[in-house]
Length: 415
Image 1 (cartoon, helix red, strand yellow):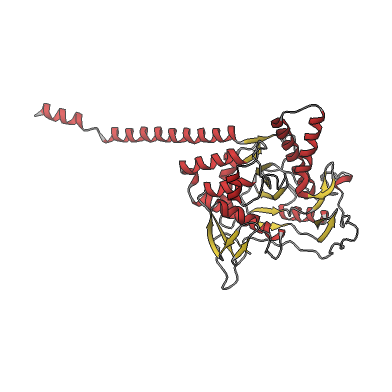
Image 2 (image 1 turned 90 degrees about the horizontal axis):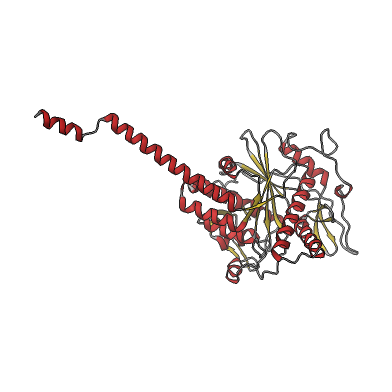
C-alpha cells in the first residue's frame, strides 16, 4: 500500500510545482508576445519610407510634440510610378497626370507632454504665404515647386536616373513644405507624416472602415461622394470621396478641411477601439499600408508616439481651421488672403510660449525678408480686391450638439 501511495504521489504534481509551471509558461508566452511585438515594430521602422528632411531642425521644448500631417494630391506611388488604373478607378481620382505634388492636406497636431488636451490646426491649402526661395504663392505648392527645382538642378548636372531624381526631388519638396509651414506658424515641427492619395483608401480598408458623421446627405459627381445623413462607416473608396469633396459644400475648400479633421478623428477612434495593437491580422494590414503609402522622418520613435496617441480619440482633440481674411486672385488663381502675424499670435496663444513664440518677442526666431507678412497679396489686373472681413478662429471639436441634432458618437458631425 505504501508503495502504491508513493507511486500515486509521484503522478500528482504538488500545488507549488503547478504554480511554478504556470509562472514559467506565462513568462515564456509574455517573452514570445513581446518578441513578436518588437519584431513587428522593427519591421515597420526598417521598411516604412523614412526621410531626413528634419535633420538639424529646431525641436519643441519640455517634451511637447508638434507633428505635421501632410496629404499629397498625387496619383503616383513613392517611386514616382503611376498608380494602377484599377486603383485610380476605385479612387475616383482621374488620371495619374492630375494633382501633381500639391500638399492639399496640412494639419499641425500639437501633443502636450503633460498629457493635456491635444490640438490640431488645419491649414487651408490656398493660403497665400511666403515660400522660401519662391516668393509668395499658395502654401500647398511649396512641395511641388521645390521638387521640380531640385530635379531640374540635378538634370543640369547630368543625373538621369529616374529613381534618384524622384527621391531627391521629394526630399527637397518635404523640406520646403515643412519650412514653409514652420515659418508661417512660427513653431517648431518635430515630426511629420506624409500620406499619398491612395493612403486614405488603404488606411480605411486596413481599419475595416472609418466612422464619420454627416449633418445632411450629400451627392457629388466630381469626388464620387454619395452619403446619407448621420453616423456611418466608410470603406476605402468612400473615405477618399469623403475627404476630397468640395463641390456642393457651402464653404468649398474650407469645409473640406473639416472633412479631413473628421476623418482623422474617426480613424483614431477606430484605431483605439478596435484593439488593433493586440490583433495581429489588423496590425499586419496597418503595417503593410504604412510601407506602401506613408513617409515619416527617420528620427521618430513611432512606438512611443502610438502609446501617446491613445489619448487622441473620443473627442479629446480640439480641431481649429486657421482663419483667413478674405479671398483674392494671384496670376489668375483664387487664393486665401491671410494675416501672418495674426496666425502666429493665434498659435502662440493656443499652444503656449514653450513651443510657440511671436516674432519680435524675446527668443523668437528672426524672419527673413521673403517671409515678411503681407496683408494684401498682389492680384491679377482687373481681379476683385480681397475681402477685408476677418474670420475669427473657433475650435471645431468637440462641439456640443444642439438639441435635436445628429449624435456623432464621439466624432464631429460635418456638412
